[in-house]
Length: 209
Image (cartoon, rainbow, N blue to C red):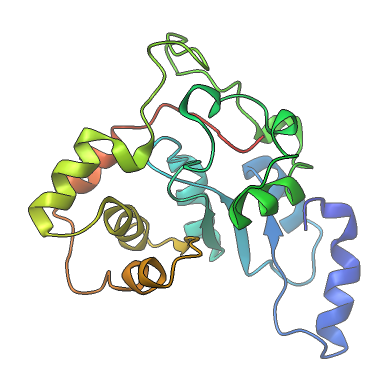
């Protein structure tokens, strides 16, 4: 769910034995604090956009401290969108045939404005469609270099990045081989140096608005 107002109804579902757990989506720290101050049943999970271009370290640590599982959607950024439009608002392109992750994003468009970012870098030097826009994550040279070192794909490295940060991940593919490939991430580990290297790619860039 996307608003604390409907949470009592979800708690009732737990009371009636219809569900085992309830969770939220696109909640920032202030929203979680407000919810935790009034709820009877703590949300089991918070599903948010997370990837190396948007690492949200404060939210990650807060959820860990509260025992709330973070679930990362769009862990690869937005590979379904043309590069020059990846940082633009989605409504203009939602009419096209998009991936399941982006259709889910349409469902998540109701996050409060306080949980959104402007789509610009922390130094305000990044423009949505300018030459300084970050390359797609799956094509990022740093990600590719780490992937080659481990004999893995860039997608596998990005999934592993989340796993080692203690974050559940929802990768998406309609290709059977890639679905299998996305699950083959438990036979290697990113090094202590590689994790902060990937975290250093953070532009505070939100693709899903």
